Image (tube, rainbow, N blue to C red):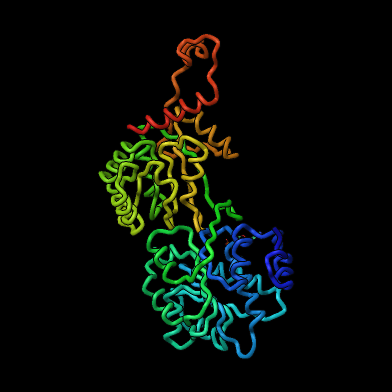
Length: 421
Ligand code: AMP
C-alpha cells in the first residue's frame, strides 16, 4: 500500500514524502479513503498508530478543495488534554507547512490565560484543536463560531469521558451544524464511549487497528533485587519515594492480590485487590475507585494486564514476575500510554533470577540489577547437590536433563508461590 493509492491530492502526497513517511500505517490505509468519500469513521486506535495524519490529511485535502472567500472554521478536533492538543496541533501544522496554501491551525486549551488564544483566533482559523472546556469559554467570549464546521474529530474519546467532559461535549454537539462529517477515535470502547459514538455517528466505517504502534511507548524498565519477604515494604518505600499518583502492582495469585492490598492498607496506603474471582460489578467498582484516585494502588493478577485502560498510570510493578514474555509485554504496556512516560519495575529474587533472564532474553533487553538501600537482597539459592542434573531435577531419572520448558515452568512456579509471604 502506498500513499498514492489512497486518493490523496498530489500536494499532500508530496507533503508526506517530504516529511519522510514512506508508506501509510494500517489506520491511514483504512481511514483515508473512507474519510475522502465523506463517510463518518469509527476508529479503534491508539496514539502511536499514526491516527493524527489519518484524519489530518483528508481534512487538509477538504480545505484545499473547498476553501474560498473568508476563512471559516473547517475542522474542529477535540482532545482530552493540553499535551495532546499541542501534539496533534503541531502534527497538523507540520503537514500543512508543506502545502502551498496557508493553513491556520489554532491550538487552544485551558489552564492558561484565555487572552492570547482570543487574539490568535482573530481573523478566524481553518482548523482548531481544542480541549472542550476552553473551546466553550472561547465560544462564550465570541472569539469563535463553530456553527459551520464541516468536520468534527473526537480524538481519544475514552479519555475525554474519563476526564469528565461529557457535558461539555454535549453542549458542543448542540452548537455544531447537523450536517457534518464525524470522525471518532478511541483506544477503548466501554459502554459510555460506545453510546457517545452511536449518538454522533451516521453509518460509520469501522476501523480497528491491532498492529504495533509506529512509535514505541516511553517506558523505563527496571529490575530491583529484593528478598521475597521484603517486597511489600520495598513497594511501600518506592510508592512514597516516587510519589506515584497511581500504581498497578501485578501478583501471581488472587490470594497474593488480597494479601498485599491488605498489608498496604495496614501501612496507610489505600490499596485495592483486583482478580478474576471478582464479579463484573466488583471489578468495575474497584477500577472506578482506582481511576478516580480513591485508591492509590491496585494489586492485580494478570486479568488486569489486558483489556483495562487506565489513563495517567505512571508506574507498574511486577511484584511477582509474569509467567511469560507475552504477559510481560501486556503488563508493562498498561503504563506509558497515550504519549505519556511510565516506569515498569520488576522485583527479582535469587529464586526468580533465572526466570527473569529468560523474560529479558525474549524481550531483547538486559536490565541492570539494582539494590535499594535498606532493602538489599541477601538470600541466595541453596547450593545444588553435586549430581543435581540427574538426581534432583527429574526425580532421579538418570541422564535426562531439564528442558528449557521445564526450567521455565519451574521458575514460573517459584514466581507464583513466592507471593505468599
Ligand atoms: P500518532 O499516532 O498520530 O500520534 O502518530 C505517531 C507517530 O507516528 C508520529 O510521530 C508520526 O509523525 C508518526 N507517523 C505517522 N504516520 C506515519 C507513517 N505513515 N510513517 C511513519 N511514521 C508515521
